[in-house]
Image (cartoon, rainbow, N blue to C red; front, side, top):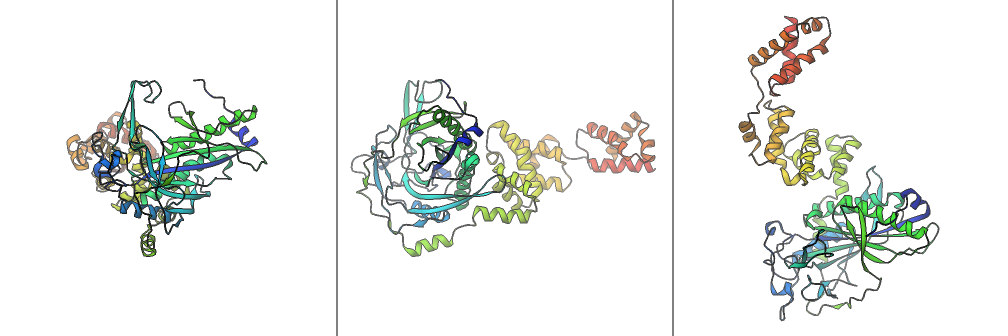
Length: 504
């Protein structure tokens, strides 16, 4: 397929105003599914099951099976609605959304249509330079997830070119909350950044509530990005496209930018935008057509006859509101003050996505600056090399153990990096890695003095230079000693000993 023509991004913004909208699906981490007692694969203890083993007749839509609403999922949904500033409906109803797809065994999805559990809210997001932008929320509604298709035989893993497809119904019936924004105006040139920051904020809120792991790479959090353009000065909205299931924060940003450039190129030549779903391709950074989509998709919604309306009591809503955790934005401001970081340092932490890991490490007794250094430095580097999330590789407790060894003078930073590597590679605890690799600092002055004398013998003029006030000359000796000791010497102590020799 030929690559679409793109307009220069700045030129596109001169001619057109971007209007955004996002639909974010959050998988809830309940023990069981939305309408059955099957294990929920989105719950941590249920990960990794064999295909089609976490199912019941309800999930497969077998005749005679009846759904039962998961009470915990309803509570989680209300909490999320409250955290988004939404009103909670006194009565909301489930509906059947009818469409055929192989991974939807009963040929309809139980969702909410015109009576969602939460509606009319807003969320403040913070852009990379600290600017606060408000995103209006139209609704947050409950529904069930579909199963998962695996396409076999093609080069890309997609249905195009595949020889056949396999269906895994484990995910069918997993509880979802879909958060739908109103049209987002005013983002202008920062539209891609707004998209990334919005999804990141939703992830932070969901994690703070403890209702989902919200890991995009696992599908716990999925985003559909809607983009339309309208000529400058025009009131009528342009035709939108919906880019489906964008699976990382960076991809949200790239997909929004790409669609702005692609649509602008078409409109500038007098073409029209097709209202359709589009697929994001991470490898090429492009979108491709999916299926046409109108505003009046005929899903033949009608009220789910097997389920009563959800009518939470005022007491329950008040109880859930009182239990809401500190809002992520408030938490960030508190941590900035407590940790004593500069605005730039804290912004780097926030943008790294490692705020929670650093906070946990500080809680384990590590100074904020040290926790920040390890997570955004060595651990992030190793994670990037492995193509993994940093938190998957090492725990906050393990990082605290490494830093404790540094604080006790057993390790220096260079050796500590090797210990972190060993812990990540599964060689044991920090202390065990030190023992196995023989990484402990040499604390006895005897070997250090012997190495210093050998370095001075090779550079006899250094002592005279130091005695003449050229203290920086000691650096050559220190470097030689550190090399001879294979990095297992305390550089500060070596410096002290060199200066003592100069004064002798």
